[in-house]
Image (tube, rainbow, N blue to C red; front, side, top):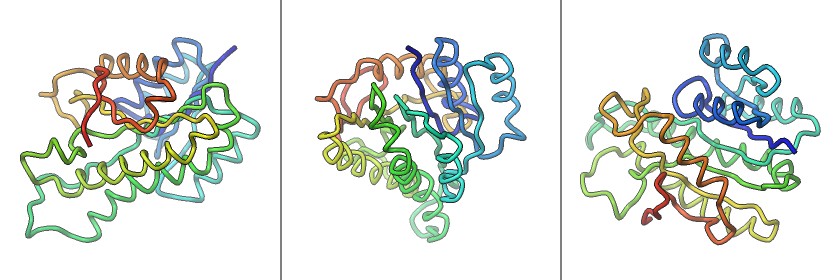
Amino acid sequence: MSRTVLITGCNRGLGLEFAYQYARDGWQVHACARDLVHAEALQALEARFPEQISLHTLDVNKDGQIKALDRVLDNTTIDLLINNAGYYGPRGVAFGSLERELWRQVLETNTLSPMILTQALYPRIAASELKTVAFISSKVGSIVDNTSGGGYYYRSSKTALNQAVRSLSIDLSGAGVKVVALHPGWVQTDMGGDNALINAEESVTALRALLADVSPEQSGSFINYDGGTIPW
């Protein structure tokens, strides 16, 4: 029986690699990107796997597009939802230069939107066989791990996301839905930069192995791509 995965932020990086690997392995992939017109690599992937991949325009910050996606999915169930779309925001912003609107944009994309999307698609997830929701978080959201300061916008957005994931795991446990926050490692993407330690293929391969095996007991955990648990 074919599994179904829906992935946000598929135009490049981790999202694109997730779409490729799941399509290659025979999953039905619903790949979402904010701007499909300029997502050439994603379009090429769809052409390579036309039976496996369906493309959807989705700006996760726009409720109207979330509702439109839900309508287009019709009677599709979703075994695995991967909330991957993210936004770092302006880099190098120090205390004294914080701006309310810029901070709000990062929180909107990284914290509010994945929760609102999960809420909208929840009936499809609960009706599936695997019932799994993954949120791509970041180790920089760990309060224990923060020994260098800075990164106010991005750090706080991921810390808040982790708290929301924890609550969600408790609230959905009765329905058998498993919810995890994942740190993908320091990855060679547009966000991670060229000096990062691993590439997207390595990260996604490891994350997929985790997601294939995630247990109800792990629901609500903050998990590193290597399988270790990251302190909150």
